[in-house]
Image (cartoon, rainbow, N blue to C red; front, side, top):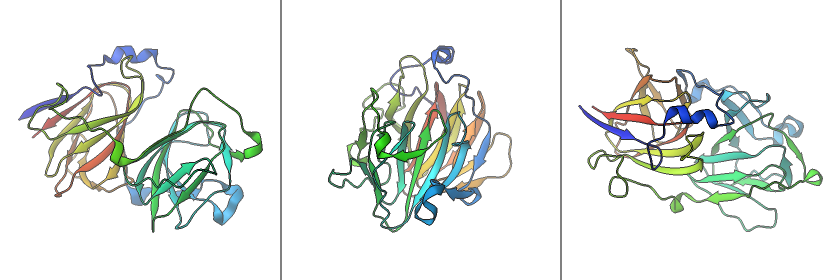
Length: 280
Protein backbone atom coordinates (compact mmCIF):
# COMPACT_ATOMS: atom_id res chain seq x y z
CA UNK A 1 0.00 0.00 0.00
CA UNK A 2 1.35 3.41 -0.96
CA UNK A 3 0.61 6.50 1.09
CA UNK A 4 0.37 10.04 -0.22
CA UNK A 5 0.00 12.92 2.21
CA UNK A 6 -1.82 16.01 0.98
CA UNK A 7 -0.85 19.16 2.88
CA UNK A 8 -3.58 21.46 1.70
CA UNK A 9 -2.37 23.68 0.24
CA UNK A 10 1.34 24.40 0.06
CA UNK A 11 2.71 23.54 3.48
CA UNK A 12 2.10 21.19 6.38
CA UNK A 13 -0.47 22.88 8.61
CA UNK A 14 -0.55 21.93 12.28
CA UNK A 15 -4.05 21.22 13.59
CA UNK A 16 -3.44 23.02 16.87
CA UNK A 17 -2.83 26.25 14.98
CA UNK A 18 -6.42 26.15 13.76
CA UNK A 19 -7.48 27.43 17.18
CA UNK A 20 -6.71 30.91 15.89
CA UNK A 21 -9.65 30.63 13.50
CA UNK A 22 -12.78 32.58 14.34
CA UNK A 23 -14.79 29.49 13.37
CA UNK A 24 -12.76 26.96 15.35
CA UNK A 25 -15.85 25.91 17.31
CA UNK A 26 -17.18 24.35 14.09
CA UNK A 27 -16.78 20.59 13.91
CA UNK A 28 -17.86 18.06 11.30
CA UNK A 29 -19.43 14.64 11.81
CA UNK A 30 -19.06 11.27 10.12
CA UNK A 31 -22.11 11.65 7.93
CA UNK A 32 -23.21 11.28 4.33
CA UNK A 33 -25.97 13.02 2.37
CA UNK A 34 -26.68 11.62 -1.07
CA UNK A 35 -28.35 13.89 -3.62
CA UNK A 36 -31.59 11.92 -3.47
CA UNK A 37 -31.74 12.45 0.32
CA UNK A 38 -31.69 16.24 0.06
CA UNK A 39 -34.85 17.98 1.25
CA UNK A 40 -35.70 20.86 -1.08
CA UNK A 41 -37.39 24.12 -0.19
CA UNK A 42 -37.37 27.71 -1.44
CA UNK A 43 -34.20 29.78 -1.21
CA UNK A 44 -36.22 33.01 -1.09
CA UNK A 45 -39.77 32.16 0.03
CA UNK A 46 -40.95 35.74 -0.62
CA UNK A 47 -40.59 35.12 -4.39
CA UNK A 48 -42.70 31.98 -4.34
CA UNK A 49 -42.34 29.79 -7.44
CA UNK A 50 -39.88 32.33 -8.93
CA UNK A 51 -37.37 31.43 -6.22
CA UNK A 52 -34.56 28.93 -6.79
CA UNK A 53 -34.83 25.69 -4.85
CA UNK A 54 -32.48 25.15 -1.89
CA UNK A 55 -31.42 21.93 -0.19
CA UNK A 56 -29.38 21.77 3.02
CA UNK A 57 -26.24 19.60 3.15
CA UNK A 58 -24.79 20.64 6.53
CA UNK A 59 -25.63 23.29 9.12
CA UNK A 60 -28.74 25.45 8.87
CA UNK A 61 -28.77 28.56 6.67
CA UNK A 62 -31.64 30.04 8.71
CA UNK A 63 -29.55 30.03 11.91
CA UNK A 64 -26.50 32.08 12.93
CA UNK A 65 -23.84 29.41 12.35
CA UNK A 66 -21.94 28.41 9.21
CA UNK A 67 -23.70 26.19 6.69
CA UNK A 68 -23.50 24.66 3.23
CA UNK A 69 -26.40 24.04 0.87
CA UNK A 70 -27.36 23.36 -2.73
CA UNK A 71 -29.19 25.85 -4.95
CA UNK A 72 -31.07 24.68 -8.03
CA UNK A 73 -31.91 27.22 -10.75
CA UNK A 74 -34.55 26.72 -13.41
CA UNK A 75 -33.62 27.14 -17.07
CA UNK A 76 -33.51 30.82 -17.94
CA UNK A 77 -33.59 31.97 -14.31
CA UNK A 78 -32.53 35.58 -13.68
CA UNK A 79 -32.99 37.44 -10.42
CA UNK A 80 -33.75 41.13 -9.96
CA UNK A 81 -30.87 43.22 -8.54
CA UNK A 82 -30.52 42.49 -4.82
CA UNK A 83 -28.07 42.15 -1.95
CA UNK A 84 -27.39 39.64 0.81
CA UNK A 85 -26.81 40.33 4.47
CA UNK A 86 -23.82 37.96 4.47
CA UNK A 87 -20.96 37.02 2.17
CA UNK A 88 -21.31 33.70 0.39
CA UNK A 89 -19.16 31.44 -1.77
CA UNK A 90 -20.39 29.33 -4.65
CA UNK A 91 -19.11 26.42 -6.75
CA UNK A 92 -20.96 25.42 -9.93
CA UNK A 93 -21.85 21.73 -9.98
CA UNK A 94 -23.59 21.63 -13.36
CA UNK A 95 -25.22 24.02 -15.78
CA UNK A 96 -23.97 27.60 -16.18
CA UNK A 97 -24.27 30.43 -13.65
CA UNK A 98 -23.69 34.18 -14.00
CA UNK A 99 -23.28 36.30 -10.87
CA UNK A 100 -22.27 39.95 -11.20
CA UNK A 101 -23.36 43.57 -11.29
CA UNK A 102 -26.63 44.06 -13.18
CA UNK A 103 -24.82 45.99 -15.95
CA UNK A 104 -22.05 43.44 -16.43
CA UNK A 105 -21.80 41.32 -19.55
CA UNK A 106 -22.82 37.70 -18.98
CA UNK A 107 -19.92 35.48 -17.95
CA UNK A 108 -21.29 31.98 -17.75
CA UNK A 109 -19.48 29.86 -15.17
CA UNK A 110 -19.49 26.10 -15.91
CA UNK A 111 -18.85 23.08 -13.66
CA UNK A 112 -16.05 23.57 -11.08
CA UNK A 113 -16.08 27.38 -11.42
CA UNK A 114 -15.95 29.39 -8.20
CA UNK A 115 -17.37 32.74 -7.16
CA UNK A 116 -17.61 34.95 -4.07
CA UNK A 117 -20.40 37.44 -3.45
CA UNK A 118 -19.67 40.04 -0.72
CA UNK A 119 -22.35 41.06 1.74
CA UNK A 120 -24.18 44.26 0.80
CA UNK A 121 -23.03 44.40 -2.83
CA UNK A 122 -25.85 44.71 -5.43
CA UNK A 123 -25.83 41.97 -8.07
CA UNK A 124 -27.94 39.65 -10.15
CA UNK A 125 -27.73 35.88 -10.52
CA UNK A 126 -28.72 34.08 -13.73
CA UNK A 127 -28.57 30.54 -15.11
CA UNK A 128 -28.50 29.35 -18.71
CA UNK A 129 -28.11 25.57 -18.54
CA UNK A 130 -30.90 23.05 -19.06
CA UNK A 131 -30.35 22.10 -15.42
CA UNK A 132 -28.32 24.25 -13.04
CA UNK A 133 -26.98 23.32 -9.61
CA UNK A 134 -24.48 25.08 -7.35
CA UNK A 135 -23.05 24.55 -3.88
CA UNK A 136 -23.29 27.62 -1.62
CA UNK A 137 -21.41 28.14 1.64
CA UNK A 138 -21.68 30.82 4.31
CA UNK A 139 -19.69 31.47 7.49
CA UNK A 140 -22.56 33.00 9.43
CA UNK A 141 -26.31 32.98 8.92
CA UNK A 142 -29.05 33.56 8.44
CA UNK A 143 -28.91 33.76 4.65
CA UNK A 144 -31.24 36.58 3.59
CA UNK A 145 -32.13 38.24 0.29
CA UNK A 146 -32.65 42.00 0.65
CA UNK A 147 -33.49 44.89 -1.72
CA UNK A 148 -30.82 46.75 -3.67
CA UNK A 149 -31.76 49.93 -1.80
CA UNK A 150 -30.23 48.42 1.37
CA UNK A 151 -26.77 48.14 -0.23
CA UNK A 152 -23.68 48.66 1.94
CA UNK A 153 -19.93 48.29 1.52
CA UNK A 154 -17.40 45.97 3.14
CA UNK A 155 -13.68 45.39 2.63
CA UNK A 156 -14.43 42.31 0.50
CA UNK A 157 -14.66 42.22 -3.29
CA UNK A 158 -16.60 40.04 -5.70
CA UNK A 159 -14.73 37.23 -7.43
CA UNK A 160 -15.56 35.05 -10.44
CA UNK A 161 -13.13 32.28 -11.41
CA UNK A 162 -13.98 30.32 -14.56
CA UNK A 163 -13.06 26.63 -14.33
CA UNK A 164 -10.59 27.07 -17.19
CA UNK A 165 -8.63 29.58 -15.07
CA UNK A 166 -8.08 27.25 -12.11
CA UNK A 167 -4.44 26.34 -11.53
CA UNK A 168 -4.27 22.68 -10.53
CA UNK A 169 -1.13 21.70 -8.64
CA UNK A 170 0.40 18.24 -8.87
CA UNK A 171 3.62 16.45 -8.06
CA UNK A 172 5.61 18.28 -10.71
CA UNK A 173 4.75 21.60 -9.04
CA UNK A 174 4.96 20.84 -5.31
CA UNK A 175 6.50 18.32 -2.95
CA UNK A 176 3.53 17.05 -0.91
CA UNK A 177 2.14 14.55 -3.40
CA UNK A 178 3.72 11.44 -4.94
CA UNK A 179 4.52 11.48 -8.65
CA UNK A 180 2.45 8.34 -9.26
CA UNK A 181 -0.78 9.31 -7.50
CA UNK A 182 -2.38 11.54 -10.13
CA UNK A 183 -4.16 13.53 -7.37
CA UNK A 184 -4.28 17.30 -7.89
CA UNK A 185 -5.46 20.24 -5.76
CA UNK A 186 -6.36 23.90 -6.21
CA UNK A 187 -6.73 26.62 -3.56
CA UNK A 188 -9.92 28.70 -3.50
CA UNK A 189 -10.09 30.70 -0.27
CA UNK A 190 -8.83 30.93 3.30
CA UNK A 191 -5.66 31.37 5.30
CA UNK A 192 -3.63 28.21 4.78
CA UNK A 193 -0.52 29.49 6.48
CA UNK A 194 -2.26 30.11 9.80
CA UNK A 195 -4.05 26.77 9.70
CA UNK A 196 -7.49 28.38 9.68
CA UNK A 197 -10.56 27.29 7.77
CA UNK A 198 -9.91 27.15 4.04
CA UNK A 199 -11.48 25.82 0.87
CA UNK A 200 -9.92 23.88 -1.97
CA UNK A 201 -10.84 21.40 -4.65
CA UNK A 202 -9.36 17.95 -5.01
CA UNK A 203 -9.20 16.17 -8.37
CA UNK A 204 -9.33 12.38 -8.04
CA UNK A 205 -8.03 10.59 -11.15
CA UNK A 206 -9.82 7.85 -13.05
CA UNK A 207 -9.71 4.37 -11.50
CA UNK A 208 -8.52 5.71 -8.15
CA UNK A 209 -9.01 3.44 -5.13
CA UNK A 210 -8.03 4.51 -1.63
CA UNK A 211 -8.84 6.22 1.67
CA UNK A 212 -9.10 9.77 2.98
CA UNK A 213 -8.24 10.43 6.62
CA UNK A 214 -9.00 13.77 8.27
CA UNK A 215 -6.38 15.06 10.72
CA UNK A 216 -8.39 18.04 11.98
CA UNK A 217 -11.79 18.84 13.45
CA UNK A 218 -13.40 20.12 10.24
CA UNK A 219 -13.52 18.15 7.01
CA UNK A 220 -16.45 18.53 4.63
CA UNK A 221 -16.54 17.32 1.05
CA UNK A 222 -19.07 17.98 -1.72
CA UNK A 223 -18.97 16.07 -5.01
CA UNK A 224 -18.72 18.64 -7.80
CA UNK A 225 -18.01 16.46 -10.84
CA UNK A 226 -18.16 12.72 -11.41
CA UNK A 227 -19.32 9.92 -9.12
CA UNK A 228 -17.43 8.16 -6.33
CA UNK A 229 -18.02 5.01 -4.33
CA UNK A 230 -17.89 5.93 -0.65
CA UNK A 231 -18.00 3.97 2.58
CA UNK A 232 -17.63 5.02 6.22
CA UNK A 233 -14.85 3.63 8.37
CA UNK A 234 -15.76 0.12 9.50
CA UNK A 235 -18.77 -0.14 7.19
CA UNK A 236 -19.29 -3.12 4.90
CA UNK A 237 -21.58 -1.23 2.54
CA UNK A 238 -20.87 1.64 0.17
CA UNK A 239 -22.86 4.41 -1.48
CA UNK A 240 -22.58 6.01 -4.91
CA UNK A 241 -22.13 9.75 -4.41
CA UNK A 242 -23.09 11.73 -7.51
CA UNK A 243 -22.61 15.48 -8.01
CA UNK A 244 -24.29 17.41 -5.21
CA UNK A 245 -23.71 14.68 -2.60
CA UNK A 246 -21.86 15.40 0.65
CA UNK A 247 -19.78 13.63 3.26
CA UNK A 248 -18.22 14.89 6.49
CA UNK A 249 -15.53 13.44 8.72
CA UNK A 250 -14.53 13.67 12.38
CA UNK A 251 -10.88 14.05 13.36
CA UNK A 252 -8.79 10.91 12.74
CA UNK A 253 -11.62 9.11 10.93
CA UNK A 254 -11.05 7.32 7.63
CA UNK A 255 -13.42 7.06 4.67
CA UNK A 256 -12.85 4.83 1.65
CA UNK A 257 -13.39 6.35 -1.78
CA UNK A 258 -12.96 5.00 -5.28
CA UNK A 259 -13.48 6.32 -8.79
CA UNK A 260 -14.28 3.49 -11.18
CA UNK A 261 -14.92 5.74 -14.18
CA UNK A 262 -12.61 6.88 -16.97
CA UNK A 263 -13.03 10.52 -15.95
CA UNK A 264 -11.65 12.52 -13.03
CA UNK A 265 -13.82 13.27 -9.99
CA UNK A 266 -13.71 16.75 -8.42
CA UNK A 267 -14.43 17.28 -4.72
CA UNK A 268 -14.82 20.63 -2.98
CA UNK A 269 -13.10 20.43 0.43
CA UNK A 270 -13.72 22.62 3.49
CA UNK A 271 -11.11 21.94 6.18
CA UNK A 272 -9.19 23.57 9.00
CA UNK A 273 -6.04 21.49 8.56
CA UNK A 274 -4.50 18.59 6.71
CA UNK A 275 -5.78 15.26 5.51
CA UNK A 276 -4.11 12.11 4.20
CA UNK A 277 -4.90 10.25 1.00
CA UNK A 278 -3.86 6.60 1.03
CA UNK A 279 -3.85 4.80 -2.30
CA UNK A 280 -4.63 1.10 -2.11
